[in-house]
Image (cartoon, rainbow, N blue to C red; front, side, top):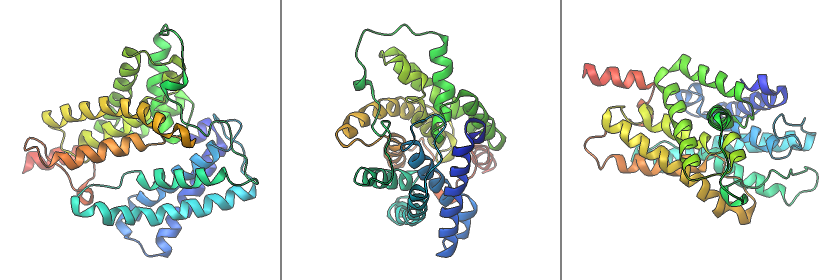
Length: 303
């Protein structure tokens, strides 16, 4: 899906994954976590973010210079330190670290670039939120919904291409149809929130409202909570909150120039997973036991 949009982003994604995975292997991290891709995923995201926010062409990326390649190596390697760090911090609460290793390293390493001159920083290195746009309520069209939903999936990996979003959704469906359905539902509801409250049409079409909400929907909708009716309604609440938190985080981060990344997803999902154990109608799933929503439903029926 990423290579379809940009071979540069595709190569960078693979590079970040390899660096983070090799770091985890070198320090003898948990083999199960390595095999599950938890180290590589965060490494891939930080590599993509660094190229996206240092490229004049955000949509397709620019080829990194050697300074940026070396910067990516350190950044991706450090995410492999943060993965077990958050595991130790959140493990007693049976809450996953999610993409917080990427978010934290992203803020630190992107922020540091503003102090260095050998790596150019693009104008995109700032959060985009409804506060950046003024004017009357836009006239939304079918394109607002279509591109907003599909790009909401694509933006999980910094891809500004609706076809990539569809391919990513198909890839999720190959592993889990429930997971794909939740991603689609999350992005759709987020677009609905944006339309109802009059967000700028370009922000919606670019998928900026959808990507955090899609991640929240997948995390709560069957992966870390059994998808019963209570779990489904709880997921809907989380998605609706995430769409608003994304906009709010843009306001909080605007003075620093840092992007929101997937922080809205992490903060909402953490809050709701921590709270889930206080509700008897919800069935939390420990991170070490999380596989596919279908597997969790099957075990619940068999049990």
